[in-house]
Image (cartoon, rainbow, N blue to C red):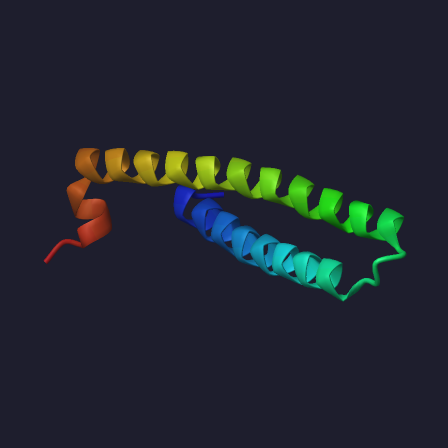
Length: 82
């Protein structure tokens, strides 16, 4: 898989995870006050996904850095030869 393809995949995963976290957080607000166990479970799931988001953001930053370094080494490769 090329760096650009991997970056695209990471961006797609980030988008999906952020949507899932937003949905989980929304569900927490919809749960009644007597369902503390389910509320805690949803909060825990959202927290775990936010940790994954942080890891994916770090991976994306690394890929962007590597792509920038690759661009500097091979300027004609990314800009095209005209």
